[in-house]
Length: 90
Image (cartoon, rainbow, N blue to C red; front, side):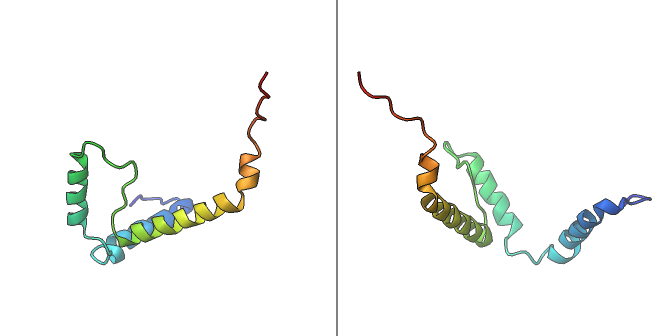
């Protein structure tokens, strides 16, 4: 820790303390299994662009996908209205 901590970084220090002292060993995911998954994916010919590890990540990603899909459909007409007009065939 710095001798003269900067007040603006208090939240960062709290987060670090939480991860070191409270979360460590209590997280849902197994770090050894995550490491094994990363090693496996590194040898894949076509690895995924996005890799989600753990049930929590899987569920959060699915929730985000659902929200994005909902916005896409709710605002489809405005979204596609910004294309150039098709030119008439001569």
